[in-house]
Image (cartoon, rainbow, N blue to C red):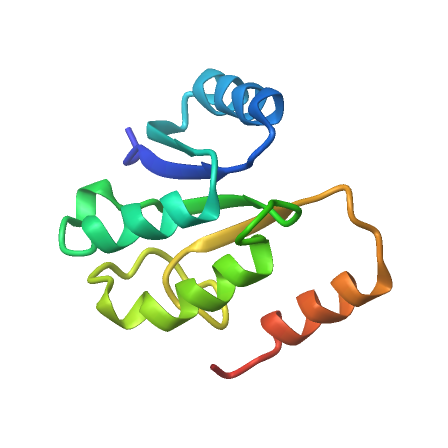
Length: 123
């Protein structure tokens, strides 16, 4: 049997967060589902558990459109703190720590450009 994984869901929309949590649970893939309503809470969690590898997510599913700290701001902060996180979770580029999936209703060309720049960056 393969290792069960941890996932962090970040979305300010309670309905979307609940539905994604149900889907993740029913998949049977995840041992732990960490649901966060704000990007700030997600950053706080990652900082708090940075030395406890088993509590860090293998995957992050991130909404872009959130108040105060949006998804792009989260990614910037995540990149900033990733050296402190003591877990080699996978090979997401540029972060090098986790598989990061973005969910959004945003179809603006700028979002696609930013996504391209983040995934083709050496930072």
